[in-house]
Length: 432
Image (cartoon, rainbow, N blue to C red; front, side):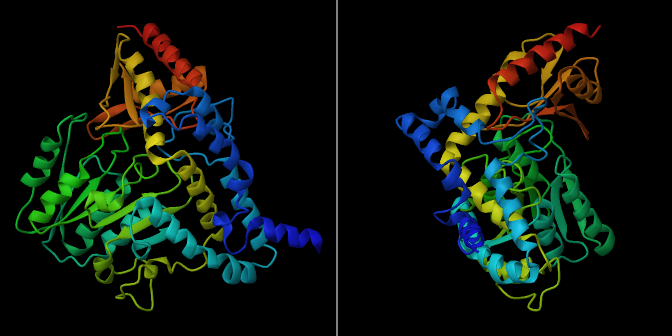
């Protein structure tokens, strides 16, 4: 019994990650606080190059030392404390699922909702917790009341699941889905905004914009697009799968109407966690993707009636928020951008090598595309892993053909040095 009571106290049943006994508090709070104190007088852009500081952050991760993982644009690993939180809550759940899940762990969702809202700078009553950006954005895409002939503007460079959702509505209901196309990188916001505006007709109801293009990392001017769209009486849906937990912004700053993200990317939350945000006054008009007994209510929780869910994953999100807040949004953004530019600036000087992403801070952060003349993305991706154990991903999508490289806060400088050497060696061996 004493061991039992100790275990229940350690997992912090009601307060979870936001209690004084959180795993973050036990494992990292003191070390990161000391590291923060040492750089307290430095600007975030100055901290970005402080390897002593980031070595403390790197130690929190459990990544395989035999593989250099530079595909964090797909899904990011979680710090050890996040993994342990999921494991602990999962073990607890299985001791008596219907009791511990529904009567105990379920009480942790409201504190989590508030912490996510705090991180996003928005009202907690506008935040729903779900599994990923696809679920969040599909909730809005299929929940909007559109009729045959209504038009939606997106791009050919948007994420495939969102494109498929709009095409499904087009096929089933007769809406018109219009895709414009860009040749990235683009270092001119007005060029992007104007392209959307030119596609508007009197029938346009929605503009769908991706905050960071997942293929090669272009940052889109969401606020400017939203302001332009609203002048025309058009609503904006924003896909922030790759920007939340990476860029330093608040949701109100984007001025969009609907927004979704995957928390298991740059926030490093448990795999299979996401977040939906809808302006409070617009919640009522969006139908839930999964049934709810009050589908027209203005309660954001109507989007969370998915039946039995993973309570351990939900509570693990809290520890990821603790970790994020300890570093700070701006410090994290500047560090990851520094890592991206560190390798990209070097390889762009190598003959046959092309960088497909802007290196200017306002247009990119972590994701960067690279190619070698005479090689397909698949060939370069395969060579990097087979010969150097560097994990990236080859991208061939519409007018984009490159290998996507995405570092994270746990990425070491020596790993990026190896990437640079590897690309140089591969390029030299390539004839022609």
